[in-house]
Amino acid sequence: MTTTEFAMLRRSIEQLRQSVSGVRIAFGDGPEVRRLMNDLERLEIDATELASAEPLRPTNSRVPEHVVVPDTPLDEAMFSDADDEGLGGYHGDRS
Image (cartoon, rainbow, N blue to C red; front, side, top):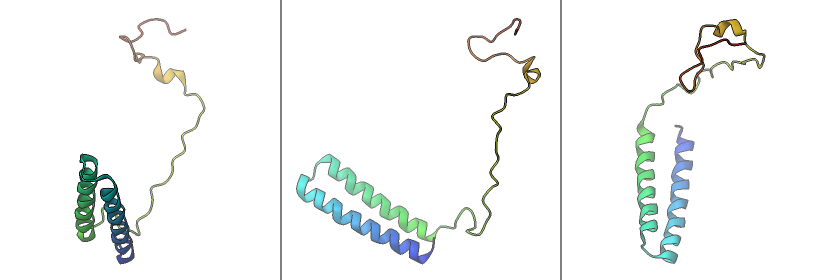
């Protein structure tokens, strides 16, 4: 996470804190508001931990190649000895 991204995340969390404070003033300290406050605290903890964590994938790594799967029907001979899924499979003539 770059310094700029982390600063944006911190600003967003602070804006959320101000919004939740407004909700707390308007709705009191009910269970819903307490859950929001708890979620906000958890978000701050996670953001702090994320700032010191190592990325799973280097930022300059390549994106995996996109594989196109054709819509054409498959050769039915590939499935000649396979059971159909469902209620016990199909054990008879497929024609």
